[in-house]
Every structure is written in C-alpha cells, then in structure tokens.
Image (cartoon, rainbow, N blue to C red; front, top):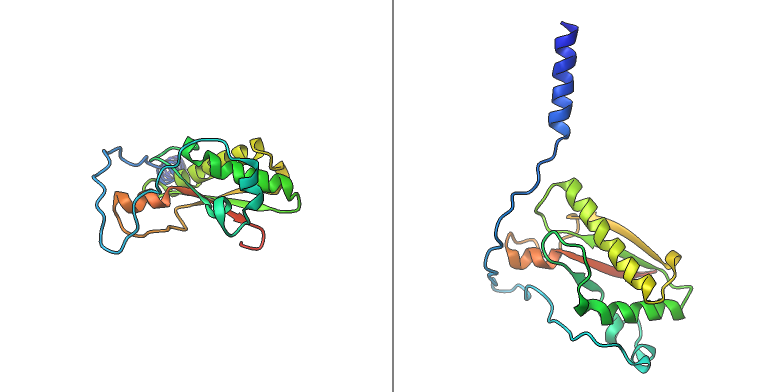
Length: 175
C-alpha cells in the first residue's frame, strides 16, 4: 500500500512539474485594430553615431529617449537596427559612471511562465552585454526578467504580441 501511494505521489509530482512547450504555429497576418499603435517600430539604418550626437542628447530626448529593443518570436538576439540606440546608452553610461540602469526583459503571453521568465532574462542579459561592449560598466547595468507580467498591449493578436516582446531600459530614479 505504501509503495503504491509513493509511486502515485511521485507520478503526480512529475506530471505537475512538467511544462509543455507552446505549440509551434505560423504567425498570423498582423491585423491592426482601431486605436492600437503599429506592430513594430520603424527600422533604423545601422551606422556609427557621430560623437557630437551623443554628447548633445540628454536622457529624456534624442537618441537616449529610445528605451526599448524589440525581438522576433522566441528570439533573444539584439538586431542591428538597435545598435545606434544601445551605442548611445552605452556611451552615456561610460561618461556618467554614477548612473545606473535596469534592463527589463519582457515576453508575450504565449509559452509557459517558466519559459517566459527564462527568455526575458536572456533578452535583458543580451542588452546588458551590448551596453558593456559599448562602454558601460558591468555594475552599472542590472538585467531582470518580467516574463509576461508587464505587457504593453493586452490584445490577443500578433500585432500586440510583437509589442510585448521587448527589453526596456530604465535609468536610476525611473524604477
């Protein structure tokens, strides 16, 4: 009797802890619903920034006002179109060593909670790596994952989900 009960408990534990991956499906055609912003930000050409560009920017305007990096479904690599933005933030952090930044990795609602937390962490750490390569100090940038807990859009459509697959950069005092 004890063996049967033990086996049943173990099987219940294994079954309860197992997570199933989100079913792979083709992305649906993005459908813009009235009143929602566009699915993804416009792409920017990848070219080095002139030194004067970063020096004249403040944290609230110009290149430094761009604070989000968007991703493809189930990806965490930073696309080249975000390099100028990360270069500007890295240079700003290098010039202002007392400044701190929090990078929040976000995901859309698809996938298990555990998967989204891990993916959000990889996204935030990827942005941190880029910022450190661009001049920021290791201790200035803290990556955290919010998983699917802080959506920018709550509709259940690809256009909305693409806005939720992002990393947000927040300077000290903003979080």
